[in-house]
Image (cartoon, rainbow, N blue to C red; front, side):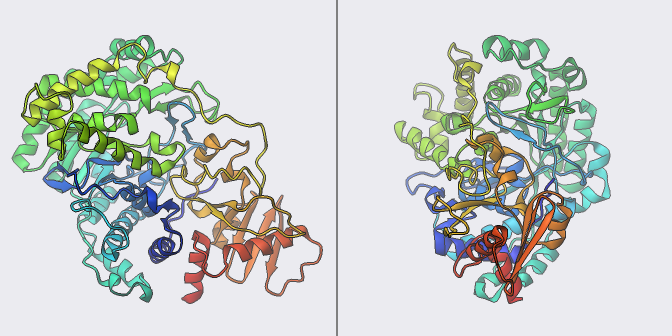
Length: 602
């Protein structure tokens, strides 16, 4: 199984700027997909005293674990970056595959795969890379679009959150000065004055508490209270969809939406907090937050635990976690329930089935941030974010709104309340009432599995070259490269696909969306740049690319080609030689070439 290896900071910075100059892309995201804002619209919002350029961002998950992931989220308009959840148990073995978005969305991935120290450094690296991009002048944004908040996410019990490793992580996010200076010294001379930027050392002062499933209500309250009091953090409490209660949740899921195959175990409701318990501890936490001078919010919703009825995950995985369209309906019902009881007392963060078609609807409810995960795992990947803003701006123009507050007031007509808070409450009722109508697009009948497989086995080279596997990888592990045909290696496609194994964690998402069978992360050239990691990956087939040589492991047999090698008739040596030449050609920008070039220069 592949394990994530953070890419060196200096090499990320070099690749980011070189790729933009040479290929008009950053980490394989084309510049045409960057969200730059609108000079005619103020898309900013407020969050815990901070102004943010947009209310949009990634949810804590596969898109916010590595520095390059976070930069990609920022490039598509994410200005509230909810970082991957960390916990004291930071040596977990996550089952593989762990993601299934062929239909609505399921996963068995629930915590970070890096150590706490690695996670801290990745988040600092991401903040510095974004600052470099802003200062470089290479990515122009509309006024006000640059303001960004990094929102931490931690879990999952009080003992873990009180532990010294987690406390050290939180202190590091509050004051990352030592890490910033160490990373600054790594930046190469070619970056010039960008090395001397005023990088922020306070990376975050907001946190979303991930309570996971089965966390007792008194534990949730104690965790939030500790984070606010001991660390002075603005805190958002993420709650579970089971707050709807078994009868109501199953009615919505089975009768109204038609997901008869989904079974939520009774134990999920028995272990989770009830609505009355959550309402009580939120009221107590509100008073505590006010006394401490910090913010308190609520997030809907965590994923929904369901029995594993599919064949994607390992047979031993008895349950999986539902996301996507059906969760959207469940979570929106909870938003209305909260507001019916508390009005606008609690700011609401939202994450459940957000996509291009409903992003503007969620913004019209005054939700901040509106975060997304499942939709970015579908065809187009991070690039789908651009459509969210196209739709939002069109909806704003349709009602003559130039700010988000104006849009909230006018989204459902101008004959309602003109106060933003009152309008958000009205909009919530109107929107949630509409979700249950017959033919709802969130119903099971409208969720078909994609893509259709063509019944052909994926090969090392010459697949369909549809390139779907590149943007759907959260870690930017899959990439395209040009490799000319030769008599020894006859190729038919203009470009090939490779997998940068150091950034691949075998999540399986590219397999789910590939028209051919086998999975790009398994079948395409799996490239390592670190000999130790390549050796540790044995016995799987894999290729080690070094500055002066390339080695391939095929069915346990190792073939090495160096500058001195006489090729002869060995087809594998010819393939390796061509591969090395294609990946390391002058001017080529990819994760392998930048790494090897930087290593050679040093």
